Structures are given as C-alpha cells and as structure tokens.
Length: 306
Ligand code: 13P
Ligand code: SF4
Image 1: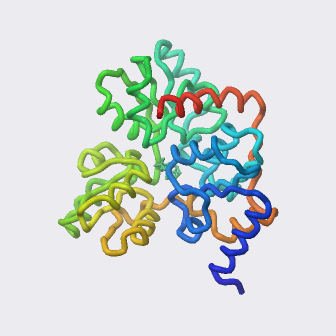
Image 2: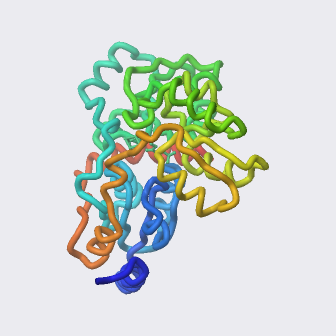
C-alpha cells in the first residue's frame, strides 16, 4: 500500500521526468492541489494554458477546461484527468440552437460563458468567465449582447453593466442553481456573525443577499483578506476545505450540503498518477477548423479581460 504522500512524490517525479505541467481547478480535492503547478479559477487556468512552457499539460477539472488548454496551445499534448468529467451546463445548448438564437437576435454579439463545448465556441464572439464577465462586457464595443448559457451569471453581470442591452437564455449550473433562499436563511440563522460569499452561478435571489459574489479565486481571496472570522460559502463545497487549510483560525461553513459537483469530484489522486504514468486520462483531440474558430473567442476573452 502507498500513502498519499508517497503517491504524490511519485507523481511529482514522473511529471518532471516527462515534462508535464499539472493545471488544477479549485474544485479538485486537496491532495490534488498539493501536486499542482497551478491552481485557480477558469480565467487563471486559461491564462496559464496560453503560457505554459511544458510540452504536455494535464488538466484536472472538467472537459471544457481541457479543451480550452488545447485550443490555446494546440501544439501541446493535453490530457483530461478523467474521461467522464464533463460540465453538464456546457452541453445545454448546441450549435443549431445558437444559430437559431442568432437569427432571432441578428444585431447582438454572442458572449459565451467559458463553460461551453469547443464546438459551441466556434459560433460565438467572445468568451467570459465568472471573474472576467463584468469587465469584458464593459470593455466590449457592442451594446447589444446575447449571453449564453448561464442566465444567473449573465443576470448578475448585467446588473453591473446597465449601459448594455443583455439578452439572457434559460440555462445554468445544476449544482449552484439548486441552492435555495431557505438554505441561505437557515445558514445565516445558524451562523449570524458569518459573511456570505457566493459564486455568480447561484440564482440571482442568492447573489442579491450575499456580502460578496465572485469566482472561486475571488471567494478565496476575499475570505483570506477579510477581517471577519466566519464565512458561509455558496459554491462547490470543496472550497470550504481549501479555505480551512489556508486560514485555520477562521471558520467556514457550507451554504448547502448539496452543493457538490460530481463531475469535478470524479478525478482522484490515483487518476492523476495514472495520467502521468501514461495509462490514464483522455488525450484531447479537436478538428483543425474547431481549434481555429474556437480560438478567436478565447483570444478575445484574454484581450478584453486584461
Ligand atoms: P470559476 O471560474 O469561478 O472557477 O468557475 C468555474 C465553474 O465551473 C464554477 O462552477
Ligand atoms: Fe459545471 Fe456547475 Fe460543475 Fe462548475 S460546478 S463544472 S458549472 S456543473
């Protein structure tokens, strides 16, 4: 039997030997965070994907994140940590549905949340992430915008950019959108001194009642810098554990015990080991025209998100 530490040491040895960069989304478990070259939110991961010096990249997260790495660095060999790790929101719209929406709103620029398939990005104008949506919407020249597929993130961002005309569609994250006002009230009753920090994928009625709304990195940075000692966290529950490691004297509580993303949780440390050993994960391969077309809206995201 190997201990967690021995397995981590073996992963670190293999990744160095094989020139593999390990990018880890914040929702992965702590034992995976500890062997990462970089941990962050979707925007930070996209920036690292465009810059990484390694020939091989292992993305521990969900499929659209690994596709984003491949699109931004097509010359690299990109592995997804678990072949079944997908984001259900990324498949809520397909190319035909977006084409129909474009016919209905012909003068609107199409802004796609990065949680979309590579194929869908080929028919969109700009991508955004939760941490960059407001600044990108502000920086875009177009006034009329069709925002897909998350109406909660889109609605929250639209409130902060009143100068734009933003059309939303019905879609969103089943994990975050399931959090209810009743759960929020119950959490506040239990922890009356705690600040409420939530992800913008939560329903608007939750975001409007929060003390802070932001990406996974945004939530973590806010909690670390805050003078407050107690926090109710309204995003995937792994963030509670990561914050507890980062700030052991502060207290963190889940907003909802059900805010668990089963796709993000599929990858284990043993999967990471198999990926670096060469007998696990899935290599991302995308057709040339998809790579080329989808790159435009990711490049525009990185330009406008500066
Ligand atoms: P972040 O960009 O905040 O990491 O969000 C990604 C995601 O999938 C949230 O559910
Ligand atoms: Fe997708 Fe929601 Fe999971 Fe994020 S938390 S990967 S948006 S299902």
